[in-house]
Length: 360
Ligand SMILES: [Zn+2]
Image 1 (cartoon, rainbow, N blue to C red):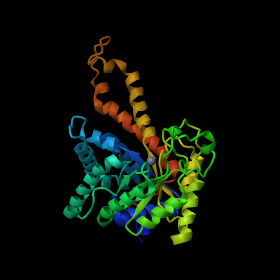
Image 2: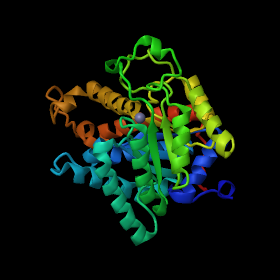
Image 3: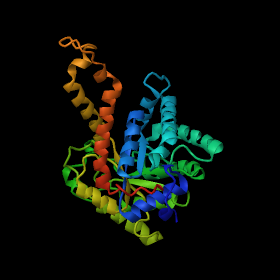
Image 4: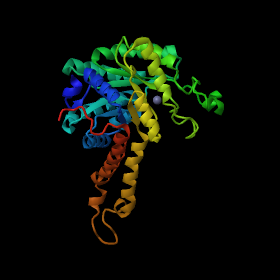
C-alpha cells in the first residue's frame, strides 16, 4: 500500500494525491495550504515543510498568480494563467530536493474567473501530453454566490475536464449572506441558517453529482465567514461538518469520513476549533493573511532596526558602506524566515509535523 511504502517526494497528483488526503483523514491531521506570490514565499514554504518533515499544499490565488507573472504584464488573464504556470513549474523543479510531498492548488475562482481556471487546465492538458503528468494537483471553483444547481452544474463540467488528467476539484458550498441581506444577530445564533452554515443536504447533493465524475473536496461554511462580520460575531461550529459526513455516509457508505473537507478563513482561529474541524475530516486549512503578516513583520523589524541603510548607501555618520544591510537578499531572507516560523506553528496546530509520506 502506498501509505505504508511511502510516496516519491515532489508534486503529488492523481492516485498519490488521493493517498495523501486519505492518510490525513485516517491519521487525524491536516495540511496547511499556503498562498504564495513569488519564489521567496514558495521557497519559504518548501523550507518549512522540509524542516517540519510535513507534506504541504502550495496555493495561488488569481491575484498571487498575476503578481507572480509581474505587474508589468498588460493582459490580466494571461498574467493570471502564466503566473500560475510559472509558479507550478518552479515547484515541480525544486520540490523533490526538499524531500517532502507537495500538493499544487489554486484558490477561489468565482464565475468571472472560470476562464482563468480553464486556461490553466489547458496548460495541464499539454503537460500530460508532454510528460504524462498535470501541472496542478487540484483547482478550486467558488460559485457559492450562484444558485446551488448552477454552482454544482458548473463544477461538474470542470471536473469532467480535470478527472481524465488525474486532477481534483475543490468546490465551495454555503455562505451567500451578509449584513446587507438582512441577516440579523438572532440568525447568527441558529445553526440551521442556510446563509451562514452549509446544509448537509447540499453537501449530499454535491457528493451524488460529483463523486461519479472524479475526486473533489468541499469547502463548507461552519461559521468561517471571511471578512463579513466583526470577529466574534459568528461562532465556529465544526459539528456542522460532522453532520455532513454522517448524512453522506448513511446514504452511500465510505467510512466515517466519506468527504474530503477544506477549512477556509483559518487564519486566527482558536486552536481547539481547528482540532475539532480536523477530527471531522478537514484535510486542508488555508492560510494566507497570517503568513503575509509574518513576512511583513520580519522585514519591518529589520528595516526599522537598520534604517540608515535604507536611506544611504554609505552611512553619513560613520562613512561605512551599508551594502550588507540593503542587499535585497538580506531583508527578503528575513521575510522568508518569518514565514517559516509561522508555518512551524501551523504544522504543529494541524498535527502534520513529522508525518510526511515521502520516502526518505
Ligand atoms: Zn472560501
